[in-house]
Image 1 (tube, rainbow, N blue to C red):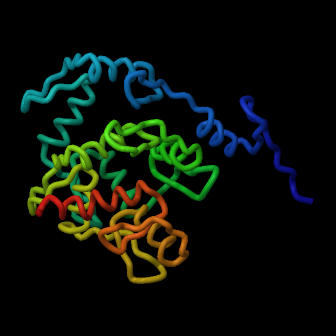
Image 2 (spheres, helix red, strand yellow):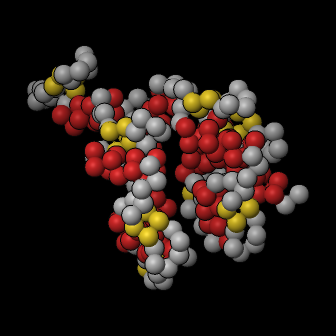
Image 3 (cartoon, helix red, strand yellow):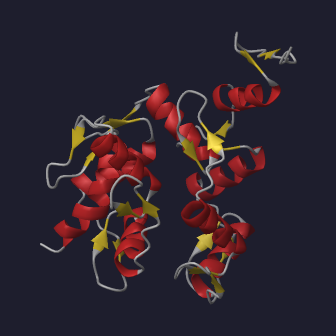
Amino acid sequence: MGRKVKTFNCTQCDFSATTNVLKRHIGTFHYEPFKCALCDYSTDYKSHLITHINAVHRNMKEHQCSLCPKEFGRKQHLQRHIKSVHEKKDMMCELCAFATNRGEHLKRHMKDVHERVRDQKCVLCSYTCIQRSSLMRHIDAVHKNLRNHNCSHCPYTSSHKSAVDIHMKAVHEKRKDYVCDRCGLKFTVRHALKVHVESVHLKIMSHKCGLCDFACTRRESMRSHVKAVHEGLSRINCDQCDFVCDQEIELQKHFWTCHDAEESQK
């Protein structure tokens, strides 16, 4: 006879599971970070919340860069800024053209692009990701269906204030603040510029479909491709090309990455 697996009960609901699964359940559904009352910011540390409020909402930024006008609320943020902006990027990826001057950025790049390590797992579906914050956003949007942030100009709603802010910039303000220094294309969000550089200029197509010759730069795009093309599960179509996906946020990312730049050239 096999050994009986011992389970434990959650103290906050009727869920029970083994130790590791229970820890993941508590971290996912009962985790209560320190939240800012003025915006969407949250953190595991009270001191970080205080610094955030002082720097962002009270404009108390005590640390100024000696090389440019940028100011920061935390010394660590100033140091990070100097490393990423002013210091030479001398740490090279051995597998592609990616370069940085921060060891943690290189490690994250390796995990995300080449090793594809997704150690944050949703207990309700097969979704996996690298960062815990991404997992919490996924749960709020997909499983809790929270859409408590509204656009003041149209019916658009989202589970995250940042998405509404991006929507405002892209749709209503027509802002494109991020410019590619290689070709001049303009984008509304930094992420769109990053994907553009990696796919167009660096030719980093690290995600390849095992069922056809489709390749892309982002794991989420590959997931949408498989569901849409090979599993027939997608229901959302781009009205400007043949792109299809299964989540609204993926359609938005596709638009910001592909058509946002095209619009800026017209």
